[in-house]
Image (cartoon, rainbow, N blue to C red; front, side, top):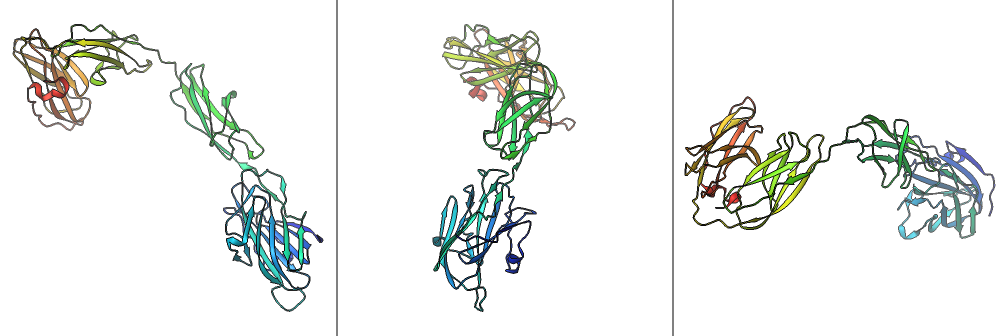
Length: 481
């Protein structure tokens, strides 16, 4: 090996390289890249090697160019091997001689080098015949595994018809910069005293396993490790009120630290826990009204209880001030049934549910069928109207439950003329299905009717509606026939 006249130029090309028409190609997406150049002699070649950016960042592409000028007699250059740190990855089809891409079959790529093979004549620099020099280049992508702020050496090996040589210790070297990180903390909602809530920070520029610390003001809450760029921490607040939460990513060997902007988290008092119970259900018969009563332990008005049988929703009933919600259920099939009551919860109170097993008897003989005829008109949100149901036979008694979809509007008693009425103030615009469910009484069985009506937006008025069929069969899918 012959090495002499070594020099390194940072931030520009040597005079020799410029004279030879050498152009530096910056790494992909790099603005203001700083080329680095090194010169040396090997195997009767004067070599000028330039890395397009001597201080690249992870993910960038750098190009290594070598200008080989012949200082001895004519030789046919046959192999050029560019040795590099194994954290650099060769870019396919980037190997070139004098700007011409080398075919893939003539390029050998390993983790720490790329080598081209061929035959290129290089004439003596003092003669009259060209070419007197050859320009060889390779491009690489800077990987995450590169050590940061450390000189990573490159070298060149050449081989030709007159022998071979290795240009070692000349370089130039590459010094990969630390990643510039950025940390973002996700918004936090629903935080309550004594309840665990997840804090989530996203870090760009970090690596899996790196630690992210979370702070409540100046107090450290805890830390989480990055996985796919995200670190999480389960935080259980101990005091109510506003908390200023930040996430901090500390300096690592490969990245510069960063901190998120503060996120204000309002921590409220924890919700009261509720429980829901069902009163015992007895005497259930097909076609006969049976009262379902659910009691929510957290008494007080608000929230709804949804009653279900076998997973099918019967109705959603508002919870009264005493914590109770009731519904007149008319079974449609005999046998074992599972009744479920689900309390949705309300502000300051958690939801809860319960189930009960009920045996429904067959409809007894000697009963009389009834019909229900619902009368309701189109309406307007926020404007009260009277809705009524006419029951036949008229003197049976009993009650009628009125519903807007699954939500119970209210229950009215059937008078001596067979009529039950209630005031309804719609709260939702659009096409609504209103139902009247007669409970039955004595030996008179239950029946129902439904009407589809249009409810206009506030202040726009409504159109008259159309009455229902007045027959039990109109709601056969709910109660059977």
